[in-house]
Amino acid sequence: MDEGVCAVRPGVDVARHARMLARVHDALLSGERLPADPRGMVARSWRRVRAQGVNPDLGDPPDLMGADRVEARRAASPLQRVLPELRAALTSVAEDARHIMVVTDADGVLLWREGSTAVRHRADRLGFTEGADWSEGVVGSNGIGTAIAEATPVQMFAAEHFVRSHHVWTCTACPVHDPRTGELLGVVDVSGPAETVHPTTVALVGTAVKLAEASLWRHHEGRLEMLRNVAAPLLVSLRGPGLVVDEHGWVAAVAGMPAVDRIAVPRSGRPIAIHGVGVCVPEPVPGGWLLRVDSAEPIRLELDLAQRPPRAIVDGANRWVHPLSTRHAELLVLLAGAGAAGMDAGALSAALYGDREHLVTVRAEMSRLRRSLGGLLLARPYRIAPEVDVVVPDLGVLRGSAAPGIRRLAACNPAATVAPAAPTG
Image (tube, rainbow, N blue to C red):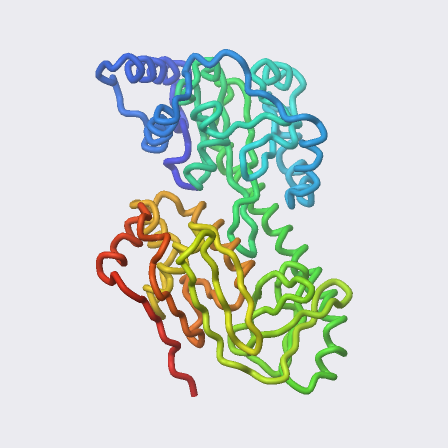
């Protein structure tokens, strides 16, 4: 793990370090000169939570979601599948070391909590329990919320927490991502009394998360393998190109066409544009969908930005219209302007927000957009498929965008933006 993640190094006098951090925290809030610089991650978090108006003397614990809402979030979370792996790796250790293990969703809402009974009782008094939102904007700098904001493992010790009542705690958190898409699924955190802080906890939690992500990937591969048994006889009988995908658009098998990893999420009766093939209509099969075409048609993507909501209009063998959020419209305009070179998550973050610190947000938005437009969008780097003609007649409702990349495009080209397809053959 990155050494900068650890709140303390081996051999550090923990009590003395905690007192120094308390002086730094007090000086920051009083406007005095800091006796030492906080770690970069902590300093960034403090700036964010102060800008969001978090009270460092927050007294009441955060409001809890009702049990029915917590159960609904648990049922929807892919992390429920990997709880056995997380328990095996962390719960017994947490109990022995006076810690608790918690698992949150991508919003920072606690869904599961296990470990030391005594520590759970202490956590109850802070509202650190199932159904609580521990994002930075609600409870200030903490392992869970800061791990989400920084998109990296975080260890937070004593007065590195922004809220004073949390200074007697240490927490080590690591984000969990969907191994297929990179989308944030939640956070795994191990927390306990401040004096129990140890740098090895960072590696322990990180290893548990890697094992969980590997388990999620095996589950995905297992489902696709089952679907391949369904796909084989279906694809053999096709006259033209076709493919079989799962309910999320992940491809199990193809015939008569180049291999692709993922297409848009199929919906009954809705045509889907597939890179290198054309526009197909999905047909339900056990465990997924069959998609086939009788003839390949060129694909044209027009971004209609003249009204709200903006729209993506796809023309091929069929024509379909997909409403866009303003953010998704901005992403498509940026990718259209980037052409075949495309843009990675860092470049998109800079173009949308003016910095490269919003990688998680960008990846999540691109994942949602790819679920809708599927094979029209490629990854590593993100780009529009080369055989797609992209037309942006006018920036329309995006002309007032605050995104630096959109403002540059508007300044360079006040009229139309057209990205023609790359020549094939």
